[in-house]
Length: 374
Image (cartoon, rainbow, N blue to C red; front, side, top):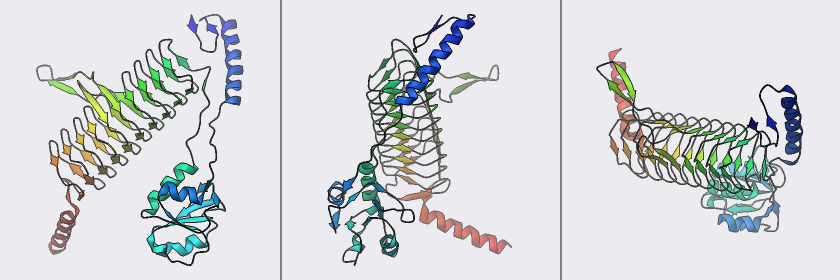
């Protein structure tokens, strides 16, 4: 006998019961979707309030309200735009936007719109957007097709969408949203205010902090790639993959990322770190706080990445390499195994990665040699 959270029991082989259960689930689903949908509340703000929130100097009517952000080309009345250089200021002033965030270069400009003068316009714009476009609110509800083990602890304020599976002793925190088709393994812990998008797989024992966003198709806590070759029989024996994965607070993980659990210890992603789509992080890796990693980057096992690092797209890092805090790797840079990288604030490029000035000089020399050879 299979027990359904919708309240019906389905006994294999009894078609009339199955049909009745399907009718019940269909009706319950209709009711669920009628009352359940993400609520995004518009949050208009006065320019005076926004100026205070983003630490900008207001020039113009502080009582004017804006309700959203946009690009200069698509802006409409009631929206906010930004410019980072003086050459784009005229375009912003000519747009339909109601107000502009600009740098110090706009001081003294004869502006036809209110200006918010900020030291870092892009940062001020992003901060303003977070106030104007709040995260969606998901009404507390459990879809009737969701399967939740009786020992799981799901907050009464959480929202669980269709066909999600939550295994034994898993924990789902307050106001967390679990989207359609997600799998939450036994003993996994998900903190408050998280957003888990469709078909995310979270393996047993994984711990996820507060306000974490995980985009569709990510797989967290799967086995690492660890094998020991048996020379006697010419085969590979799987090394134990029994560690854990720990994700810190305020992390964002892009679509189809894969992060392996530790082999015997832990894989750790530090608070505030952001991963683009299609990033792979191997077992026993440690990524520090507030680092950013762009798409198609791969970290081999036991790599250590410090705080505040920036890794461009398609970077490859060999096993047991160590990147100090503040390391910057350009796209397709390669770090050799066991390499210690100490170059805070210096952009590294190429394989093996070296300072970009050196890399460009080497390319120039190779180009000259190639021309001579012809």
